[in-house]
Length: 497
Image 1 (cartoon, rainbow, N blue to C red):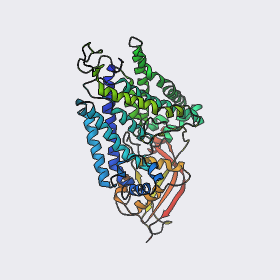
Image 2: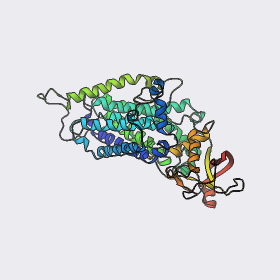
Image 3: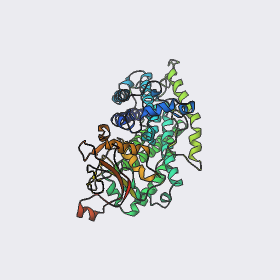
Image 4: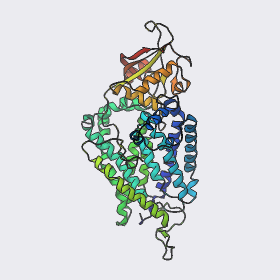
């Protein structure tokens, strides 16, 4: 650190700008492929109906977060155009093209990504209710003020990134300590690898590790989330303490965060949550030897008055305003971190900045999967039933779970939440109707349509308890899962007429 200029964090800025932009590519691609079927004009929860409700009263309008679709009538075509534009802008940022221009250019690009994706999240309803949505929005807003390659990044922009990582990690740690007993008695990860929303190809192997290892995992998690985040701010000591020690402490803390997140990447499918945390953690890694050009650490005596620590005065004012804004907005998330009833993945303002984060305050002890089946027989009691296959969630017991993260399979994730609720959600009933209609957009969300695009006569939902097979069971049967405890959930159902 050197005054207003974070001259040692050029590498951090490059990772932040390009990494956050890459995550926006993933997010817009996910929306491009799934939004029309889930929330489009003929989707499960149509956005036009939501917007019509929002226009019905002032109170309803206030409840809807900012979105461009309040001013331009929603259509699937406009949604596609928005996603393609977002992907193009984000790709330019990944390539580093806007960063070659004055700082206002990359700022405009990131703000366009922020506004564009917020417009989608604001109308995304339950399909966009995940914590990593608001995390990406906040990261994109902060990235807008990282500047361009011809000047050092500003200290008052780098520090809010550390504060974001702190809220993300420490908030998750506090949620766990206050949550289920399994986090306090160190048994949480004995279950988690098997019961997590969408297991990956290595989740079964992780589940089969010894119990002592799972307890060590929990201890390591508590250390990484409750202790380590405090040391992310160590580089600030470099403003008054000579030598590399403060920077080394901050970089070591960031490395621990990155390492634990890579373990989660290897053993699960949490969309871009882990990858976003990894990218953001790089904000605390300072490399003193890596600076663009020959930028001096201190300005010469005859430096122009509009250049302070290598940063143009207008840009310095803009970033200082950002820092002041975050000081004001941070009061509520600070209170929340230490509140008795801590909120998880919550926004305290309409622009979804300085949010509260957290995940898995409790861990489910058994995995219940809802399986959707259909038949073309007229008599459902004597019919032959065939199972619909999902892309990510467990179904076929012989299939190895696939790695999809950072891509987000929204339908598969919500299928995991269904057994945890007290009743079936409206979107699920609409989903079954779409299957009875053999809706092509809905079928594209699935991995396997047993009827080849033809509509079934009857459809139903049943529940099973899923468990990973042991090593002996795998050798004997070749199956990765075993399932039992079958019970009816809904149906059989058919379309009237």
